[in-house]
Length: 118
Image (cartoon, rainbow, N blue to C red; front, side, top):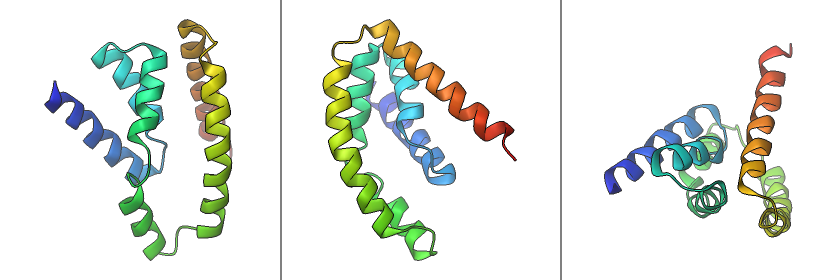
């Protein structure tokens, strides 16, 4: 089980570093499907895994190449800090199946827009 969890982390880390996607997009389905977690537990676990400094080395590499804006990143972090708390508090009142559906629809909409925009 430990090896599977480490492998999930490694694979998600590689994808996140390559294409800059949030690890949660891959962590959450993996935790639900491979480890049998509920949507709530998968989301909470994913957030715990993504706490700083997990992305620090990837950020440093992008920054070294001139591909990261520290000011924007810091402002995003402040908003995410507050918004994450508000969202997490509210999510506790949403049934598991609806959280899963909201997550899936969000992925489809964002992915569809990125796939079809010029």
